[in-house]
Structure formats: C-alpha cells, structure tokens
Image 1 (cartoon, rainbow, N blue to C red):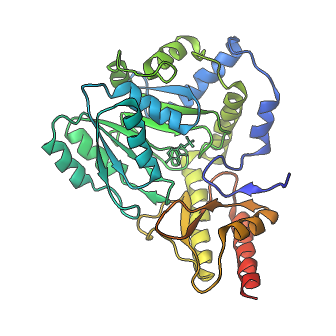
Image 2 (image 1 turned 90 degrees about the vertical axis):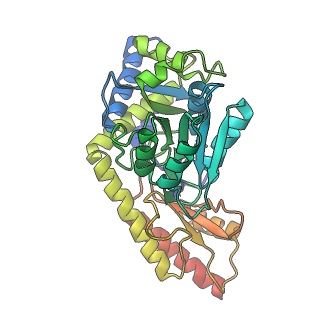
Amino acid sequence: MNDYKLLTPGPLTTTATVKQEMLVDRCTWDDDYKAVTLNIRKELLRLAHVTEPEYTAVLMQGSGTFGVESVLSSVVGDGDKVLICSNGAYGLRMTDICTHAAIPFVHYAVPYDCIPDAGRVAELLARDPAITHVAMVHSETTSGILNDIEAVGQAVKAAGRTFIVDAMSSFGGMDIPVADWGIDFLVSSANKCIQGVPGFSFIICRRDKLLASQGKARSLSLDLLEQWETMERDGKWRFTSPTHVVLAFAKALEELAAEGGIRARHRRYEYNNRMLIEKMKGLGFNTYISGEHQGPIITTFLYPQGVSFRFADFYRYVKARGYAIYPGKLTELDTFRIGNIGEIYPEDIEAIVSIISDYLKEAAK
Ligand SMILES: *Cc1c(COP(=O)(O)O)cnc(C)c1O
C-alpha cells in the first residue's frame, strides 16, 4: 500500500504516537480503562470552556453523523420543532435525519457560498412560536465556509430556544466558548481537529436540557440520555466501547495540550490554510468561498481555466507523490478540496503546491 498523508477533513493524518496506543487491548469494565473515559469527558469540557454541573459530556459510538442523529432524535420531541439552517451537505443531512425519524422540522436553506443570517433566524423564530430548537453546522466541510454560530446563538438565546451545533470539523481546531455562544448541544467527533482516529463522536450538553429530554428518544442505541446516565455512573460505556479508538483519543488530547492547546492548533491550521490559498492563487486556482467567509479547515478550489483537468488523473498523480486530496462536493461547479488539518505543517503545504505545479506543467505539454 502506498504511504501518503491525508489532506482531507477527517479521518486525517495522525501522529505515530496516537496510532501506537491502538496496539494494546483493553478490558471495557476495567477501572483503569473506565478512568480514561472519565478523563476524556473532563478534558472535553475544559476545551469547551464550560464546567459541571451546567454542562456535561457524552461519548457516542459511531462516526460524527451518529452523534448528530443521537442529539436530534433524542432531544427534539414529537411535540417540538427544530429549525435547521443549512448551507451545505452536512446541514442537509440534518434534514434527512429528521425526515427518517419523523422529527418535526422547518428548513432555512441558503446558497452554499453564503452564511445563514442571524437576523433572519430571529425573524423566523419570532414568526413561529412552535419552533423549540435551532440546529446548524459551524464549519461546513462541504465548501469550507465558516458559519457565524456566535451571532445565531445570540438570536436563539434571545428567543429562549435550544441551540444545537454540528462543530464536527471545527472543535479542537477553533476556540468555541460553548456557554458564551449560547450553545446547548455541540457535536464533534474523534477523527477531526482533536486528531484521533474514527470510531466515536462526542456531545457537549447543557445538563438541564439533556435531563429534559427524558422519554423523547426514538432510538435505542442512539439514546443520548441513556448513554449519559450509564457513562456518568463510572465511565463504562452502555454498549461495547471502541477501546482502541478511546485510547488513541486520550493520547491525541495530550498531544493537543502539548502543542499549546486549541489556540496554538488554530494558529497552525490557519497558517497552513492561508499559505495554501495564497500559493494556489499563484498557480491560477481560485477559491469557491470568498476570503471573508473562508474557514481555516478545508478549501474548495475551482478547476483551472484553459487546461484539461480530470480529477481522477490529478488525484492519482498527487497520491503517487505522497498526498491524498478530496473531490469537490458541489453539483453545479467543477471543484476539488484540500484539507489542511491533522499532522500537517508548512512543509507539507510547500510540497503539495509544488506537486500541483508540476502536474499543471505536465498537463500543458
Ligand atoms: C465529518 C462531518 C460530519 C460527520 O460525518 P461522518 O462521515 O459521519 O463522520 C458531520 N458534519 C460535518 C460538518 C463534518 O465535517
């Protein structure tokens, strides 16, 4: 198998030391193992700038979507209604989740290169008192756009509703003061900016809102309150926990602290991102998202003009030289995406840009 680094939004390139943690088998009811889960939950609250008892953290088996589905299907009751603000595939996925589970929702969709407007959210909430919850994505990985959850959170809080945020591809790579921004449920996963491996998601919850969800869950295995109640006892997971992934995640949290915490990681990601965009512009690639809304996680580039450009060829060429990139996720435009999170440093950005420059030269021959 070819060895390559991932310039994708997760799973992403992890350190050798994080991977090393997975070489040991753990017993799920062992006290030492359960303590690892309890420590992870504590550390996640610290990273979110919240404390117990106002907030608590729950870990949930499965990929990030399982976490989002767990929250929506557990806390929005049959008599409630959630306003979903979307500007990409992950926002749309929330509407899919609601359709599948027959969760009442209304949809406020904006074009993928625009952000949901806090004033508009306030209007929608004022007009429809039946709306009890608002859900939206922070970093829309579909395009790389960064949504203003702080402004929307203020509108939601002012209207006395519950705010659910999918911060999958931002938490750990961007500072999110969860309580200050009025977030009641924040979902992220092990394999994004914390730089662990895939296998579980986690939810930072306002404890009173979590407790208020009693009796609302539609799914057995994704029941958020049940999961929390079991985990809260002594750190044991309700069903088989992804032991190797949990150990790797604990190590990844240590390494995040050693790097200097979220602020330091954010600086590295942002530096990578700005450097990538600047150098790609030098090669003639424009970004889909305008500078003001472009987030520091992943960038969507438009195909270059005047060169024959096939993504499959391009991907193979780049991979053979040590990097995996991402196809675009827009239907109306030809694009590809490059992520800059994970164990990625300026020398990797130099390298990828130089590979792309070589590709263009060869393609022009
Ligand atoms: C990665 C991601 C998810 C979860 O996707 P999975 O494939 O289930 O891990 C959800 N929302 C956003 C914004 C993401 O980037």
